[in-house]
Amino acid sequence: MTEVFRTLYPEIEPYASGHLDVGDGHTIYWERVGTPGGKPAVFLHGGPGGTISPNHRRLFDPALYDVMLFDQRGCGKSTPNAELGANTTWHLVADIERLREMAGAKTWLVFGGSWGSTLALAYSEKHPERVSALIVRGIYTLTKAELDWYYQFGVSEMFPDKWERFIAPIPTEERHEMMLAYNRRLTHEDKPIRLAAAKAWSTWEGQTITLLPEPSTSDHFEEDEFAHAFARIENHFFVNAGWLEEGQLIRDAFKLKDIPGVIVQGRYDMPCPAKYAWALHKAWPKADFHLIEGAGHAYSEPGILDQLIRATDRFAGKTA
Image 1 (cartoon, rainbow, N blue to C red):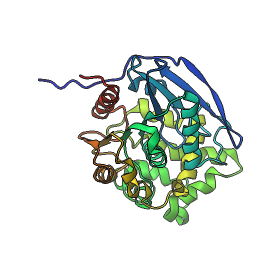
Image 2 (cartoon, helix red, strand yellow):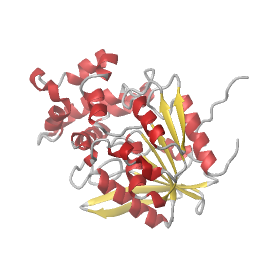
Image 3 (spheres, rainbow, N blue to C red):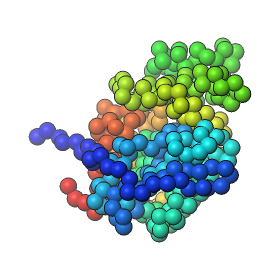
Image 4 (cartoon, rainbow, N blue to C red):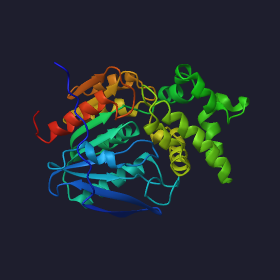
């Protein structure tokens, strides 16, 4: 019998949206989809510096969920665009709490993939009493080893052609510290210099997150406006190790012990090696673990998406 993969729910528009002033000169764009009064949930997008998209709304049964989605500080429809000041992991954790209070939810399901998994873990370990369930995909714990693997040596061996384009803007004498070399250019006062670096940084990610080339995913990363905010914010977070202590998210995973959850990981995820999803699985045994064969990093890959939809259905009490 042929296995049938679950796919996205039909397209849906928000029933409410707006901007929330979170202080420090930042306002964040938010939207809510589904059924008012349904199961509360919050969706955390990737990056840092990515955005929410219409397809993210479709990961939840709209008849059962009331979902909050938002663009994190400095990106998407949030303002000011590409702003680095007062933009750290802990500012974002505080923003999630502000949104929960605004939504009137005592607890809610937290869903995050890639950088969204990092933020979901940081939030859930800080406020476990506010999390009814936790779904994470493409686990990234922001250790030095993970950062070096993607930006210094590791993925470079898998994609030598794309790596050559990534290092091209950086002089040979600076390539021993690629993140710092890019940081100097992404924070340069000359916008053309920032933009050229941003497009190279962003394109590297867009072209290495799927198992097979997927232009519908990677092309977006080459767009000027998206790349500028994405690269600046992501690099800003990563050169500062996310303002996390080394190994903090796995070390503190014991705080998730009473939270039901699901971990979904592509076997061939290049940005986020499966080793760290496995470590989270061992540290948080209450969560179901799904290692997806024949899949990379993107949530849209069939085996990954199937398990994500099954997870949101499960936590809304929906049976197959």
